[in-house]
Amino acid sequence: MSARIIDGNALSQKVREDIAQGAAELIKQGVQPCLAVILVGDNPASAVYVRNKVNACEKAGFRSLKFTFPVEVAPDEVFDKIAELNADPSVHGILVQLPLPRQFDENKVLEAISPEKDVDGFHAENFGLLLQGRKSFYPCTPWGVMKMLEAENVQLSGMEAVVIGRSNIVGKPMAVMLLSQGATVTVCHSKTRDLHFHTRRADLVVAAIGKPRFLTGDMIKPGAVVIDVGINRLPDGKLCGDVDFESAREVAGAITPVPGGVGPMTITMLLANTLESARRVAAAKA
Ligand code: GUN
Image 1 (cartoon, rainbow, N blue to C red):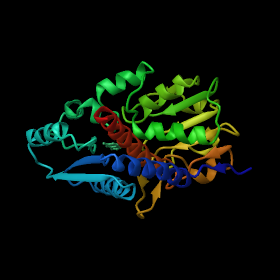
Image 2: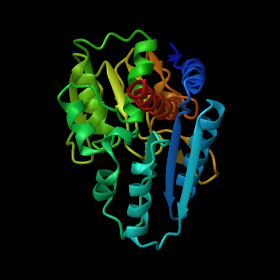
Image 3: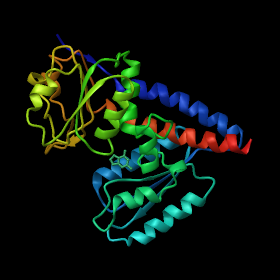
Image 4: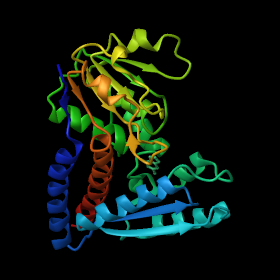
């Protein structure tokens, strides 16, 4: 049996159409959603992600601002830019692309962004609200995964879910979101003793490991939903996920491809958060 392919491009396009319509309505009220992106250094993958984010803004009718700093920049220069953007009422979302060069304390940078403009959902205040099950800006990648599961009618309540990876960007918020929907969640990571044991009894596996084709078909329960958050570049330049797609698709019930799975949804949810932030500003003005 071959798994159903969960098409992130198609869902993304549908959601982005609604977002563009929402932006057009706000513009009529005199508020154009605006995302400011800060890129520090010359990480090629980060440069691609930032370019995709800026392009997506433009397609949705948002304004976007991009600020680039050299790799050896003094952190204060970046903090000054964040402070300026925090104070600018025409800016609704601020994103500092991670990872940052060594001289930065990433947590301090994320804390410097006003929680009302933290459209990445990385500020401790927004993270805390998420943990408490309260409204906040949700981190875009796990929120995109939740949207995909919803669109696929995956009934999370009572499900055995295994998240592989414990990062602040994906693994931890993913586990919390699944938990809030009633799944029984196990978080596995590099120190987990018997990963196969956990993944083979999971109805849902979310792979956010950062290792190409790590999760193979023999590690998956027949019929399980497999979500691949990985984006890895192979020596031949091609992209692949953390899941070995060819073997996994023979066992899984549904699976996301790479590219064209979770990736486009991450940017879509960034647009959704920025639109929401702009809506709050418009509502406060009215
Ligand atoms: N680096 C990898 N993923 C992300 C993300 O979602 N947001 C930011 N700001 N940096 C990242």
